[in-house]
Image 1 (tube, rainbow, N blue to C red):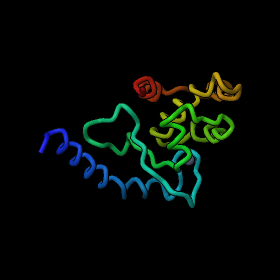
Image 2 (cartoon, protein in one colour; image 1 turned 45 degrees about the horizontal axis):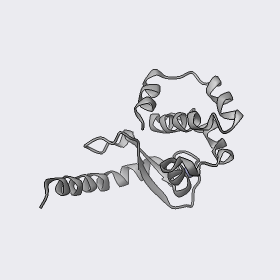
Image 3 (spheres, rainbow, N blue to C red; image 1 turned 180 degrees about the vertical axis):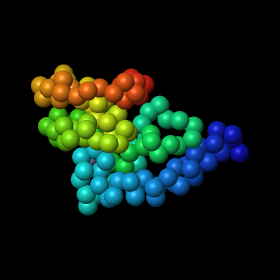
Length: 132
Ligand SMILES: [Zn+2]
């Protein structure tokens, strides 16, 4: 068996182990838009570490997941939820919210207004700058 394949399998197994604590933390709600009663999927904040890390993961609804993975699909008005998410106590939510807000700046005027209101945590800003 190829080493890369085996590493990939081990990683998937570790990811599986994080499924339960992640679901517990999210409480059946999308950790960005807070939609409940919908299918939720884990999202790993890039750059993806060798060992999966709960602090680098969010449990997101399908719509959030899709639009983050493919920013061409971003619908600006859908993301007004970021006005709340950016104040989250969960750093991973803040990281992805900030990343999205920056993407939204050229698309809509309110994104910049939100960015001007927040006190940017240097640690969060650093993590956002590392996202690809
Ligand atoms: Zn969502």
